[in-house]
Image 1 (cartoon, helix red, strand yellow):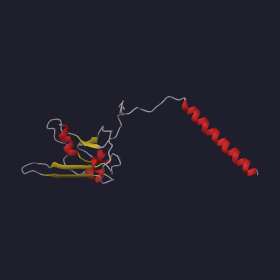
Image 2 (cartoon, rainbow, N blue to C red):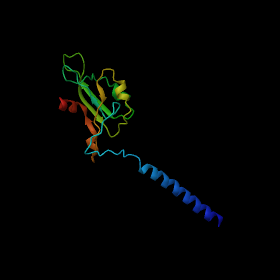
Image 3 (cartoon, helix red, strand yellow):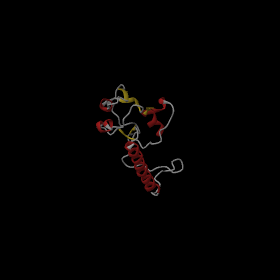
Image 4 (tube, one colour):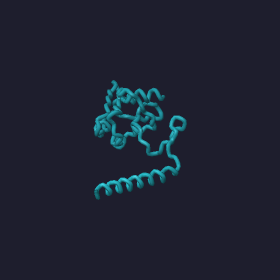
Length: 146
């Protein structure tokens, strides 16, 4: 019989503690943003998916197809290819694909790039129902921006 009263007392105490927390939080200001109506401000350190950085003069990507970003990626979500045109001194980027479904946003690719060719984008509104929507052709995205 003693356990019965201990269970009731313990449950009542737990209920009182929970109601106290709820009452205390109820009167604090609301921190929820009304998203579709008010766009949130992104912080300086926000990390979106990576994007290619264009050359200021030519508009072509700064990437020299060294492959360091691909090797540094622990998720293996970056694949790139390039070719050396006849008569040219260095390779030209022909394909740069990011599989954002497996990207962990660790930043190893951005840190390993010595040519200032990739950075984190400011895109934050990425939602979809199809997995293929998150496999980005970054070279095509760069050309579409220009």
